[in-house]
Length: 234
Image: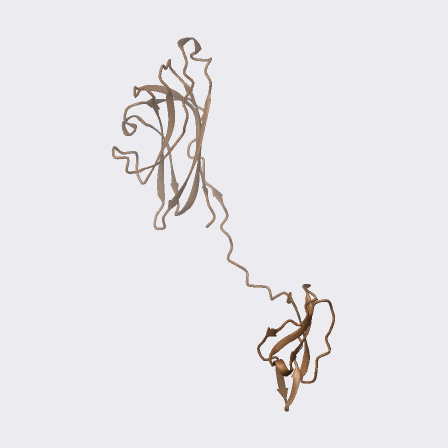
């Protein structure tokens, strides 16, 4: 119970033909706490003797009963919003189980192997890359396979078109007795978000490459590679 609460309100009295008429706001069926109190009299536009336990106070002369609910009725249904944009899978750009040899070492713009391209319409995309690689030669140094991605043009000497390198970790180091069948496949993956601005499509270029820990040159086998693009809802 809340008693003797004083709540200043706006005018809640209508005058019809010079007669003061109480305005009562009753509790709705939507739930919430119902309140009853008095308004007017000596305290003016103030609600007092407020109860929340269902009690209706006896208001003195010059005041009138007033009631309301802490939760009002539900409002009207709002207008429907615009239709959402469905996610669209646009890959894969390259998916091939035919093994191919990938060069490592040196400059990527000279030695990288082109895998494929994908042209994207304007929008925001999540690129997902997955590839499998194995050693193809005896390596005393560690080999780190890489998937290189450029946008707006092929890979170039200044790497101005490069946007993303996928892949981390080294391949198994093997000796001559392990080749060609006793080697471990290594799986690599990565993701990247790209925004294609409005105006015209954007072509992405994908390359296989790798680096040697001794800064030398070599090769590894790319067993399979897949790159897909998922358009993100705006």
